[in-house]
Image (cartoon, rainbow, N blue to C red; front, side, top):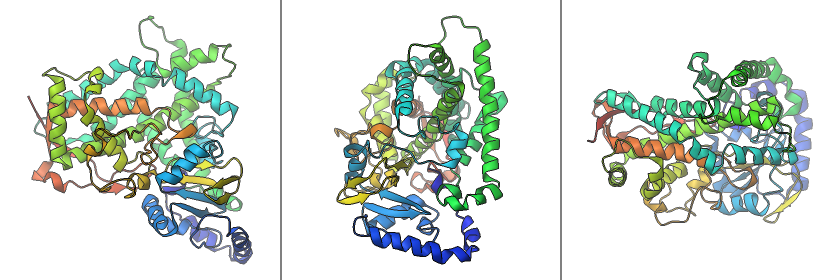
Amino acid sequence: MEIFSSSLTFVACVSLITTLILFIGFKWFTFDSKAKKSLPPSPPTLPIIGNFHQLGSSPRQALRDLSNKYGPLMLLHLGSIPTLVVSSAEVAREIMKTHDLAFSDRPNLSIPNILFYGSTDIAFSRYGEYWRQLKSIVVLNLLSATRVKSFRQVREEEVGLVLGVLGENSGSSVDMSALLGSYTSNVLCRVAFGKTYYELGFTDKLKKFVDMLGTFCVGSYIPWLSFIDRLSGLLGQAHAISKELDHFLKGVVEDHLNKKTTGEETQDFVDILRDIQKDKTIGFTLNTNTLKAVILDVFVAGSDTIFSSLDWAMSELIKHPRVMKKLQQEVTEVGQGRPMIPEEDLEKMPYLKAVVKEALRLHAPLPLLLAREARNGVNLMGYDIPPRTQVIINAWAIGRDPASWTEPEEFKPERFINSPVDYKGLHYEFLPFGAGRRGCPGLHFGVVLIEIILANIVYKYNFALPNAVKDVDLDMTEANGVTVQRKNPLLVMPSPRF
């Protein structure tokens, strides 16, 4: 996750250490020649940096281009770390199903260790009994179908607020990206904390946290150059951001310890985790740092990914009036003139679900899934993979693979009508939330957030672009980052449909 989002400016520093280049280059190519017969195809490497120079400004695209030349299972060397890059459904199935247990670990990365209390969260913790028990607790208590339904009122209230803003600005230009971002953040805050904490600037703190999470850390890939991270101030910045957010979370936990309950309100995530802390029968110690790490997981996994998925889905609908019209016909039939479409009616809208799936296919929330690591040596498709080899799955490239999809670059929701292909981790040509043991446990929570707001805003409003820009000319330029978001905000002019 952190290896692809910032420029490799450290190369200039590395080039100064000329006395070591020949030695390391010799070691590198000696290793390569010994292993060449049993390892997957690999592009040529440079001393010290390996293949980092080939990632460019858009790693997902650069990796797809390299895989077109070297194959869907390709070995890169990112610094001193051997890294498999997977770019097809067939290889993804081998990694995430056939050999899922063998590839279920996470690499040891410096920045997540600092930000997530020693990687004691679900996303970054190493595979083992601790991770299994923590994931089970979170899935059963925070992300079960029953728990997701319990927050329906929160979602519908926030949808109502969005509809109100659009109505108040009918005929005027509205920053839809900002509005969808606020909706996502507000729902997550209310679900996790019970309120939004506007006054404490939580959203700004979280943005700095996510930006730091996506920062390249030299020491994670070239350990003997880890001093660069200290000299550059990177580790100091990470500790400062962690301390700032930790102070905020301590305050939230204190608020929950002191609050008075009526017995009628829905418990938020902190309430639930505090109850688990007190339960001595579960056989698992959930300390306060782990509680805070889990809460951070909820926001990091949910905020940017849900928002970017919403933003792209809305952008594609506006750019494709035919699809928008067809979706509006469906939601109008289901809505029947009511003020709002309730959540229970989402199951009556197959075209809405197809639109969401198609947006997730073209705009995978996390284009390069979180890196896995081999727990032991594995024979993978005839190749010998050493222990501790990292694995990067290019979900963006797999979702656009012409071997799996007809007209893969086109936005065509109809491809999902009467199709069994889903995002639940059973169809490896479509991996917006990953699959296997390390698949995203919050996918149901995220999808309902996307579906309910999309259904209602297209039910209540038509949309035009400002300055008489034609729908087909909507700028769809992407910005590079951990998640792939629009480079420029989506500006629209809403008008009531009835």
